[in-house]
Length: 317
Image (tube, rainbow, N blue to C red; front, side, top):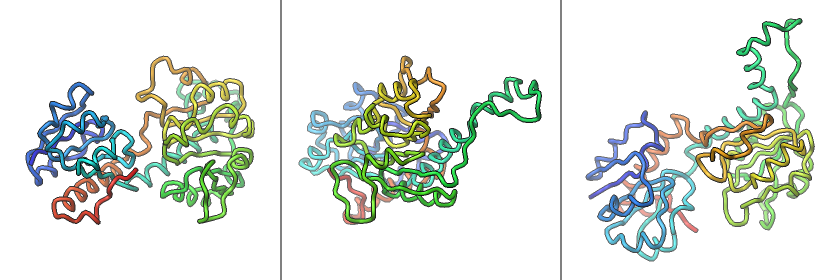
């Protein structure tokens, strides 16, 4: 059995991938571009990938392919319908990064609320040593206790963020996504969520219904003192409008771990602003998360080979 890993670099060089050798002949590629995909997997039975696009035209040429293991929770880069028609099983791994993403969410919130980057820079530059008093008070510093945090997307990550927010003494608001009917818990209408939240944090998947969910009209509903956190997907926020909202101080600040195009483009205007913090899509990537991800892929392959399809995390439309 031929097993191909297309993007080992996305898993990190501190992760041992030899565990997959137990299932067959393993070929590992650090990165793979669109022109290289077919020749690398044309006779593979199992493919492990993250962001490489496996669309209809490609899948229809792969007569040997039986199992696609997505090294992520999201699988919008796979044509699921085509795979199903060709009896190709597509699996993903759920909830492996919950702790890491929730932790990073609060690292971003705290960095903005405490002006952490600014104050660290004041010390590094020598400005603190020149201060006429023992401290510096030239950047805002806000407590979380008593503030309202709006959470849009209340899956495993959203729930964990709510737990941490409660520990900080924040008031948690769970938002309704437009066009979705909810029956599980009391939720706040979307526009009310925007208007009331001191901190708005996004944990919802990217789909046609969530693309550009936050644009200039939504930012204008938010408090001028509010901050936005996006560790979900870049396309949920319209970046050109986020730029305007930050430049014109419609909202106070933002911290994002994701962009519409990744890696971030050199001409992205968001990088010119002082009231935004941008990290390179790393919220998911703790060592522990990546180890859980590998364990989840191994478990999916093992169950597939044993015919235990009911126990596999099968990706669905």
